[in-house]
Length: 176
Ligand SMILES: [Zn+2]
Image 1 (cartoon, protein in one colour):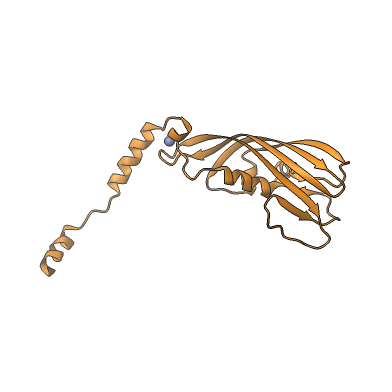
Image 2: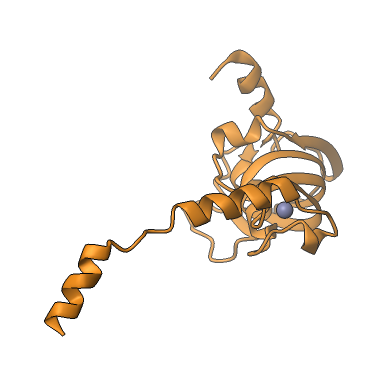
């Protein structure tokens, strides 16, 4: 990874152990660079601002994420870029545990008391990915499809239709 990327990804390491008891705010940003590491076939680009409020207490840290911005995905109809606005609120509770524990709840994570920071990249990636609808189209987002692309796609799908070899057709008739 180049230096700039390493620097970019540093923002997702939340150093919770040095935080005092109380509320702390962070601003994170997700853009194209994020998906260099978290490759995704569906998300082509993004511009998302995340306000993260960390509520630190004696026994745990509660991360409140407020994600707002846009994702660029492909339209299912015309395949052109589709701007998909998002505004999501998610909570992640960080608890300390002496022994290694896997959390069954996706909004709860366990960390060893010796850990000083927690990386929120994977959590954010999953939140974004889960926000995508099954069907992503311009009309559903009150946007207009690219007509030229649709015409082009229709033409190319017609020309690639397999043609039945007339000799096979003739053979079939003989066997019948
Ligand atoms: Zn479209």
